[in-house]
Image (cartoon, rainbow, N blue to C red; front, side, top):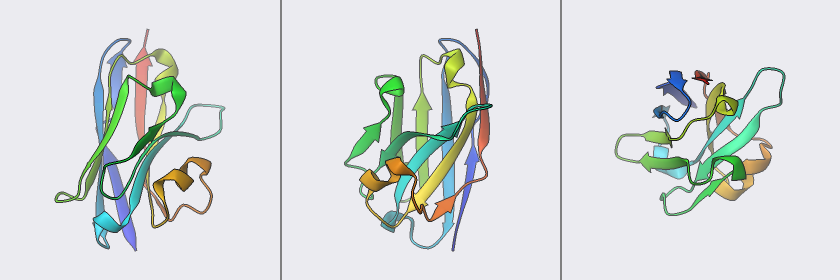
Length: 125
């Protein structure tokens, strides 16, 4: 069993920055591919970014490329999402996820092993 706890959400102005953190407890963190997903009001949850177990491979949805950066620190059991140049359309609840499969498979959100409870990000114009 793995518990994921997100933090770092809040209110930001358009053009501003926030950094989300997700701390994992339970099994060895480094065996999991990690990802960030988001769900805006009235919309389906969507893939944002994933990172491989070693941190050497990352993937992003087109809408955040060049603005968001996913990273991980396996010594701290933590995955981060640095969000720069925020836009009002980035407003959503952001979820951290962990999966024993390949990071590339997380984009489809099928059978992901663990989810966090989410953290709200609100970007004002």
